[in-house]
Amino acid sequence: MGGAALRGADTPEAHHVLGKAYQERGRPDSALPELRLASERAPAQEVFLSDFAQALLDHGDFAEALALLEKGQRQFPKSPQIALAYWCGLLCPSAGPRCRERFPRSDPPGPYGGAAYVFLGRIRSTRAAG
Image (cartoon, rainbow, N blue to C red; front, side, top):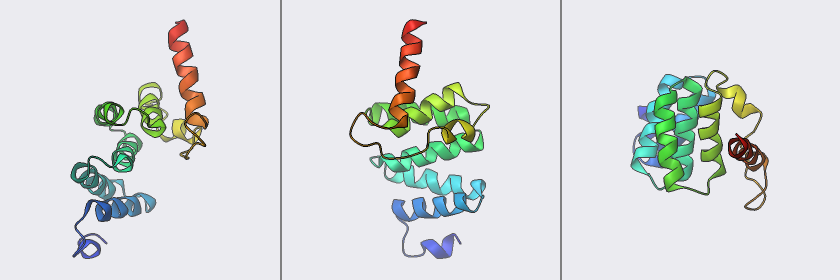
């Protein structure tokens, strides 16, 4: 896998697919550079940024992930996935993937549905009360 898979297809999309394949095979050290390339080469693609940040969180690179997710929140202010990953990174660094397992990745129905919005609403109400 790797160079041969990308020969003739050195695109952000190809790097993203390859990075996700490495993730699925439990090879984060190979996945992270591919996901980074996809995110850097196509910064307007929300999913590339989100997937790279999630991989960083899974790998325990919280500082880099949070910096990337802060940038992502400015660039994609309506993204529930980026907001959820950011809050999980802040609130659950020791829990890592277990935090996100409680709030699975999904496309919420409509702009106000889904577990991510419920979670974020609870966070915001807790912060406002405290």
